[in-house]
Length: 286
Image (tube, rainbow, N blue to C red):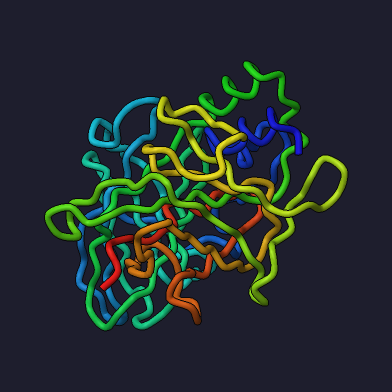
């Protein structure tokens, strides 16, 4: 795989740089939810309410310093019967009528921003997403691509952004974890195939180094704790995260769908979208 193309795609989620030819969804198509409403919480007539906050990603800035993003259209992907929500001045959204006890995708769209998806397993009660959804601007992706002389039309498929973390003072406070490795498998448990420069090739994880730069030589995560798979074909996959000393089998409802094995999560990839913030919690084995 062309390292420059892959790096540009991952760092700023450049798969969805629609200005360079990646497909775009238009408002009102079958992938969208219903008409957008405000971020205020409304009483649902059916289903459950999902709430959360959207913030803007910026390179080499700690997550705690990300700023909220108003005006983001948040929908239940491919569920037009569920009204969309638009984030308010505080970046808050509320989706009312989300099916209970279901595996769903939330979509996040705003002009000049990269399109992102979040995975969620709903329960019988309302759910407030713990980790803010972080989205980046298209300008950042274009700048990174230009810096590396990348032909953006060569980007294909979708992106999976993953993490591993360990609880700190309870699950509400987490610390991103290094030293783990990530594998992407098909649903049969075989190595997944991604688009390559000369045809299909095994999907390879790209990790960020401790300065926040992508490093194709890394075989495991740095202390930054995040990485991604790029040029991934549309479909469902198994993400497996392993650590040399910790057990990585704890999952949040908002970080991937349930797999048969506890050390894996199911991830869905959609062309020209990033499936973001998929991951696990790791801690010492019992």
